[in-house]
Length: 461
Image 1 (cartoon, rainbow, N blue to C red):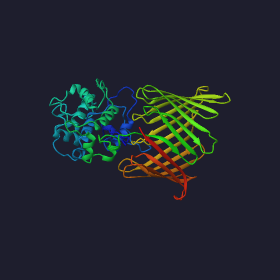
Image 2 (image 1 turned 90 degrees about the vertical axis):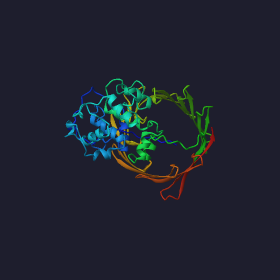
Image 3 (image 1 turned 45 degrees about the vertical axis):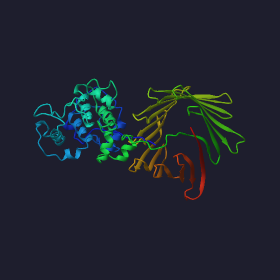
Image 4 (image 1 turned 45 degrees about the horizontal axis):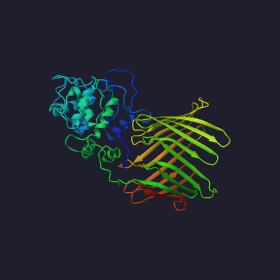
């Protein structure tokens, strides 16, 4: 199963006073999530850290020529050689630059010839075509050999997947764009090699192979089965769910039947748009009905959801939910407003780490903070969470949650241990030969007493 993943970046550890950047119009970065992944891969260090220890990327300014050149060297897997280089440096304007060794090394390798025989202009702004040219060179393409033209590097960049068609036809270019194009370059194939840039860097030991694969950057084949299995029944201590599907494998109904409920059932029903996205979801029981109607953004993410509640006595209400996301589709904000009382607003906000796991969560009602949570994790070499700590702060109290995860050789989570101030338990997960979850057993704190069991049944689609 392919896992989600990281980002790459350009970069440096640098003293900002050494290279003032050209001021551009106010710009809001879009690819901070990409920068986080590049940072985890060791390809983008940022310019410092904030009060929470998170890197400061300055994605809202233009990159310098020195920064662009450093990124090229990193993407070639040659940073250590560059940092220790003491050979000839014809560029007198880099003598006091943080990037002096990088520039001299790049000159010795033929990666740059400067702007003249004695000048490199390290602190001037890098253009889009300059940066895209560097990325294309890292992918094995040569403007000198006619693979592309420097003045239209954006065309070849779009062809290789480094950017989209029509992007970067002007010279307006931010560090945010560096992050975006650099991360895309990692999953692009090296010319005539049949392997991605990320795979090449991983093989050289420049970046973590496990992280690169987790982020989907190596082009590794999915060795899992091509067959699709649909969940048809889930049974637990209290009752069972049964599921029905249409001919496309879309879920039509999910009905829960209580064991001792006198035949009482709870049903979710789904209606789809022609593109396969959910149009409405309806929840029914004997006394009430909830209907959820969805709208979508151009990328297929949910833009809004209208929740309508009706009960048997004729009462009801409506809530409008609106959503925003980061560049990887992680939910950033959910704003919930009562349609009948628009001033009644609930706001949930999230931030994430490079692996897409939450770092912070906050819940605000009518402008007043009710709850916040800060998360910390440890990971294994494949980017899987080993431990998770949640620090919860409420209006008048606080709490801590600790979770531990164990995995089998296939990467499936087989055990989860949970503990907070009021409870502790362990869950064990079982899988069939197809990798489908078939059992979930919850044990009390002693790890022996079985408390709750859920089993799952499937059919092949």
